[in-house]
Length: 289
Length: 289
Image 1: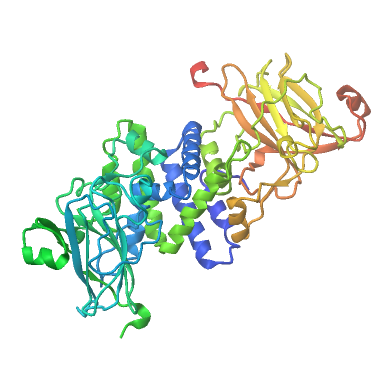
Image 2: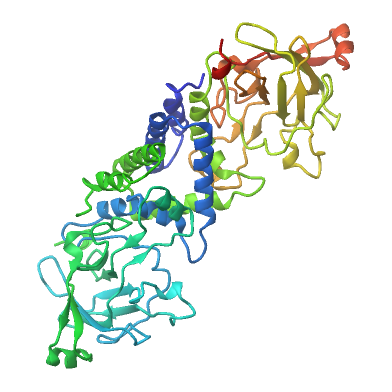
């Protein structure tokens, strides 16, 4: 009956034995074992335990319709990437974090449209193909794209400066699986630092920056969707992303081009930056041959 | 550079190497290792990860001036008791959880006063001594006492029914280290179940009840304070406290007495219940002989 450091974990695990949902029981048992191992490892003082309770409470209370501080905490502890990576499919393009800025629906746009509604940035074209693992082009594949400005802000962060939908677009590939759109080269930027997670980064001497990137969610019938980024090669922080999201295969050259013919084809002026980013979608299990 | 399931933990641990506070660095490294081990163990789906984020967010948002849902979560996972037990002192009376109801200051009362301000309950006397480990009585030791009613509610839970300070008292022992006060026998009661923690208990088939108990914080100069309970022997749930706080040594008989002489001494009528609960305080390290 006595609760001791030695009997604690077994007693709490035992309390979950009546859980009807077998998966939930497995989750709670594993959580109990790992959480207790952590507590026994560090032997917190009562003041440290109170500080942890206070930190978690403040993290929950920082959340609202446009802010998810627990996702941010998961991000900076590498948990989001761990979960994303374990749920990826080796057949397809590597996945990476969704991040906290996919909060509004992207406006539907035509291939070649510009997602830079401000029109003040240096011109850039992003193009590529969506493919099956065997190289078959996927016509009509959906691409949800979002990115920040050259100044490093998403539309939702600057409602007074950017029109809604700036930097966002929902595209569909053509009959040859191709896509292309006009934009600006996104900037590196800091994750929000005015909450408990920002305080944690400061206390641990970590910077809050993410290297420049364009977000994609690609999907097509019969295939597994992928959430990923095209990282801008040479961007600051590409080797020390605050949320650990960089995978080498996702680093993409945003090359300066003087090609007049291509510029005309894409509707931009020279010089322009051009990134080519192909996306491979794994076959969905229930559609596998 | 690549983030993989294999390299993830080392990468996140490495990110905390610049932490100036050595204890904070130790905490974050240990947290990272145990948290990643948990995630790798259970391999959560993206939906499960989102559900976990939602649960933690709701737990933070349930907290206010009179409710601490993260403490409740820590309690039902056995973490509060683990921390309390690791910080206890074997020289003294066993410690147990503070619980979420020690939120108002207890009114100062004289020995023999009643903490039952309603006066409708069956009479009960709690008495005992506060002692040093060698048995020396501690005169003037402070005892902060709080408990629920016979119906299982603390004053702060029933502001329309109970006057503030009902069930609470701040006492000091007499020259022989003795204390005694009048009260009612507290009831077993459920922890609050209208929040995320209540949902967790329901989903896992766990009951929310705590066995009946009187809370104490005892302190005296030159000694380590102790936070503990006197559990009512024979109370329902004494073998399955929802927060794992029962220690065998803290279970106390609340015996029915017909002793007319004692009843007069304590200012109660017969029959009355009588509990004797002695508290031993460990010597404080900087006052050790």
